[in-house]
Structures are given as C-alpha cells and as structure tokens.
Length: 270
Image (tube, rainbow, N blue to C red; front, side, top):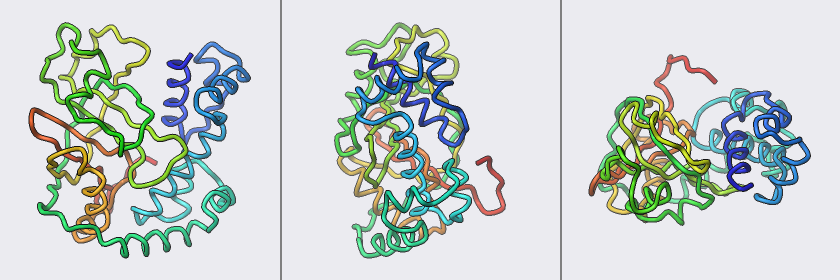
C-alpha cells in the first residue's frame, strides 16, 4: 500500500497547477476515491486535498520569498484563485509575507561564501530516483544514496561509479511533509532497459540555468543555500526559480546546483 500512496503523493506534486482531480488519481491507482483518501491519510496523516493545498501554499511561499514574480502570477503558477487560504496558513497577506520574509533574510547575515557560484546552463539528464520522506537536515552522505535504490550492488549495466543525485524539494522552509529524492544519474537510454520496482522512477532533469557551488560535505548544504539565497544571488542580480535543488556527487566532488529564473525577456511556460 505504501508504494501506491507514494506514487499518489508524487502525482499530487507533479500535477499541482493542473485541474486533474482525485477521481483521476483513483482511476490511475485502481481504487475508489474514498479508498485513496483513507489510505493516503493512513500513510501521511492528511487527506490528498489537504496535501495538495499545502503544496500550493508552500510553493507560493517559496516564490514570494525568492523571486520577483507578481502575487497574481504566483497564484496562477501554484494553482489557486484567491488568497484567503494563504492568509489562514501564514496569518498575513502574500504581500505582507514577502515583505517580512525579505526583512528576516536581510537580518539573518549568513556567513559569506569562500567561493563564488558558477553560473551555467546544464543539459537535460536522466536519473533513477526513490522518494524519501526526510528533511534536508537528515540527508546522509552521497555514498549511501545509490543503496536506497538497489542495495549494495546496482543492476547489470549500471556503472558502479554513476554520479549520485539528491533532489531537494523543500529548501529553507517548513513544510507539511518533508521529502527529497535520492538516486543516480544515468547515461541517455540506459534506464530504458531497467526492470523498475514500484519504489523507483525515472525522471528527466530538464535543461536549466543554475548557480553551482562546490561543497565539502552534505552538512554544508543548508549554510551554503542560505548564503547563496540571501547574499550571492542578489549581488549577481539572479533569482532562485523555486524548483528542486540538485546535489550531484561524482567521485569525490559534491556540487550544489541551484535552478535560476530565466533571464529577463525570456518566455517560459507557467
């Protein structure tokens, strides 16, 4: 049951801005809507609709904090039509929330980075990942990430030295359900021949502009993120896009890749 509800949770996240209903989710899983509601609540402690609403509000909070997008545009991107739910959750209007978060970030004064981030555009990549319901502060060392997929030995054809990957979905904020994805990056087409158990999924990491920073250990992630978001990016005139942050471990190298908003005058899909 848990693997099915994990797929339901991921589906709710991936269809956040769409109008797809719980009935469509139930049909995908082969259950009735009431069964999905009951089992989802058993696994995660809240209903699917309450979880989707939390995801929308948490995404709105990220975009209000880290991007210059307008309040109406953010509401559209997050899939809600009025601000009353936001005010109930955060006890302030979206504009008040943005102003107060910016004040708090300016007052936090994180330590300055010893290296400047590198700005570049990453090509699309393919990865196999599994969902883990822990926060960034519980992230284990990179050598443990592949074991979350297939234990000590990877399947035939998967290189032992494939780069490890962590996708951080909830950086720098409290959330209703902490989560991240752990896995490995694969060469194009390699995942097509894998027999995939229910706990794993193939994801395509789209081409994206990033601010990238070398780290010495996963324990440095939160401090590096705070310094990037509050100091380095504003100095460079850049903004975090709000999408999942990537950690790539390749050999002894560990790199934090923070997705950036497109440059001005670039049109993107909502």
